[in-house]
Length: 245
Image (cartoon, rainbow, N blue to C red; front, side, top):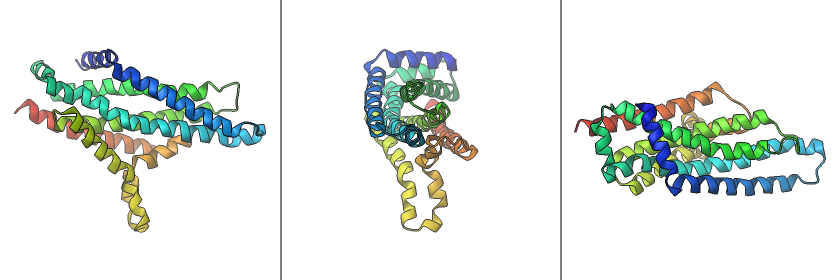
């Protein structure tokens, strides 16, 4: 049932302009950013070019893609849950032999696959330079993995926000508020650096940075796993309350 629900949601997403517009906007924006990075390295010696090109591409292209995913994931999550609650189709799903866990996992799986498609443009753009520039495919694969894990966290936050209200616009606002908090929580280190190790750990961008540098650390994988699971658990609790209300 989880796979059936995920396939239904995924097909539904591509039957509307939203998914296609997001793919087109991401492709166009990231292509422009990549061209700007390449322009800065034009004319340099091969050794100088290879020394910084890969990191510049990873930080600029994938870093920009993470911001686009942060904007896109709550919209997709609100469409997947809040809009169904508003339109009444959620009541039909709740009447089916589906547990809250199956319903949530089905929608999360659909979002994960959709976000995987949105992670493809930056990876394909950077890999398209193979043969034309001294690129490091391993670095870009690590960056793409970090980007996707970040997107899964954004989707989990979006589903939690969508479980709180039947109004998609309000769900998006709540999700953006939570994600903004997780983006800037480590800024407190400017006030009391010696007391902010936990706050620094809570910021998702601190963990994404290592992936963009080509370093896959277990601690960063654990962070994304724990935070994604936590927000999914919050969403599950809310959906369970709706089921048995």
